[in-house]
Structures are given as structure tokens and as C-alpha cells.
Length: 360
Ligand SMILES: [Zn+2]
Image 1 (tube, rainbow, N blue to C red):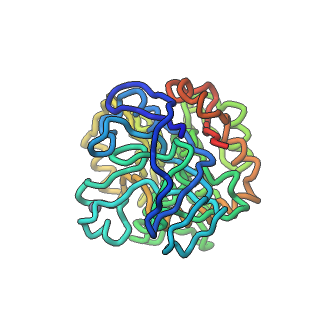
Image 2: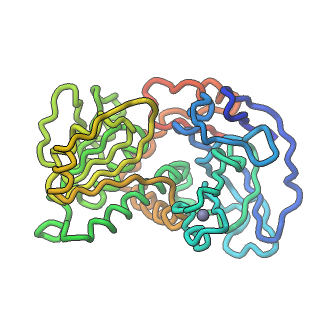
Image 3: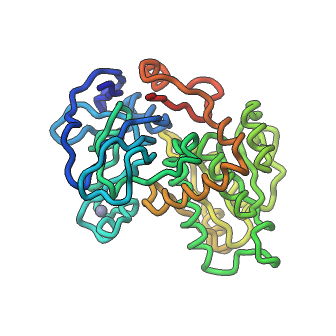
């Protein structure tokens, strides 16, 4: 079958025919035909050779790329109860270490040993191939109504996790407004890529005021999305008039993008760090430490997601299907075939929000 293959940490990517046995299924396994796979910064980081933690499965030289998958069930093992042939499914990415308490209860996103594997990223083949076999426990069933946008579920699941962590931590005091909603709370989201836009949608859905920040003017698509969901796009190079923030979500990974904003936070505010990048230095001053202490500022990083976060993501996509349909469709800025994927995985196309590979 056709597959998109890398050899981490070596730079480069190849579309090639691989030989994988898909004729026998264990009792708890499912054979899935791939429908679509999303491309994100992690994939391009692996292809560029810069993501040092990427590695092939043990004993292999090659890794099949792809962690944002959507597929359709073709065959079922004899003990699979919750799925039928023809069902659409999204596979979760991380598989636990089998040792730590969190992994043993399905919260491998909080693995404590670091001995987990992640499909298409480290130690486990991914979903950029025509077919794959997976265990039922790692598959999230997708209602037919959202199959056209379900390729966004994996990135959304990470956003759902971070949102839930924030709301859990903010129960340390009363954070809602005097009418019981969150409409007095201002959220600044740094970055207007797919993750930034999904964060914007989730906070808008929950009643927050949302500002999407970038250091340039919005593209026509970004303008459309911000206007349609009810967020405000701000080009920070033209000056930032926002003075009262309650939350900063950084999707850029650049310390210099969010550190200068921290002193605009109200008391009991929070910072979610989601993006990662390399080679940038920033100074943490004693004045800023004092500000963080004196104002009860919460800062946390968040990575990956649980199966429950995927399930909650399905619920959000089902609601957004009617509320944000045109926005979700516009977020998929390009669809390519597997044979066209080498160049698209090497270089981000201009104006991209989300590029997907169609396997059908
Ligand atoms: Zn673990």
C-alpha cells in the first residue's frame, strides 16, 4: 500500500509502496481505510529533521508519518463491540507506557515515565497510509454528520484538554462574572493557525471575549474566520490597546510573544503555553516574578489529550457544525493527494491554515 515515510532524525520524506500484512486481525482489532490525514507543524518538524524526539518503531529504520487521522471501518475482530463496518473513526495518538498510574487508567497524556509512544511521531507508525489496523480502545467513533470536518478532531482534542485544565485550575476562586457567565473575561490568543482558531472557537462558545493576536494583518481567510466567530483580530505591530486580559493562550512558542503581555493580566489571571519552537531567549525579571506572585497568576503548559478529550471534541464539532460550518470548511485551506504531499510536507503553502491529504 501507499504510505508517507520518514527516517527520523534524517531530513526528508518519501511516498512509497510498503508491504504490511492487513489480512489478519486480532480479536480486539479493527481494519481501517484511511479517508484523510491532517498536516501540522509537528509533521513538518519531523520532515525537516529538527524534531529530535521523533523516532521509528523499535527495530525499524522508517516511520510512517501522520497523527491527525480519519478513517472508515472495513473489518472487525470478533470481540469488537462498539463499532460496525462503515463507521467513521479517528484514532487517538498517544499509547501509554503500561507502567505509571496515569497510563494505567487511560490518561497517557499525563504519562509520568515518558515511555509512551505516539503514532506518526515517536515509536509507532502513523496514519499517512491507505490502511491501518488499530485496537478498538484507541478509536473514537465519529457521527456521520461531522465526517467532513472530523479530520480537525485530533488538533481540537488538545485544545479541549487545555481548556478543561484551565477551568479545573480556575476553580481555585470565583472566576465567573457577576451574571454567572464568563462574558467579562478577555482572552488573548497568540497565533492564528488552526490551534489558535480552535482555541478562539472554544472560548467564544463558552462566552468569553476573544482577541486573536499576530504580528501582521490577517489574511482574507483569517479575517473571515475572526468576524464569523465573533473574535477580534489584532496586528500587534500596530500597537496593542488591550490593557485588561484575564487569559493569555500562546500557540506560537515564542517567549517574546507572550512575556510582554503578562503584565496586562488582571488578578487571578492565567497563561496557557501550547506552542513550542527553538532558539529564542527571554529574560524572567524579578519584577515579573513579583507581578506573578502578587496577582496569583497561573502558568501551565499542556500537551496531548485523553480519549475523553477526543469524545468532548466530537461534541464541540457537532455543535459547531451548525454554528461555525463555513468557518470550519474555510479552515481546510488546501486538499492534496498523497503523491503531492512531499512538497507540501517540506514547505508550508502561503495562506495555509490546515492542509489535508485525501486518501480517497
Ligand atoms: Zn505512563
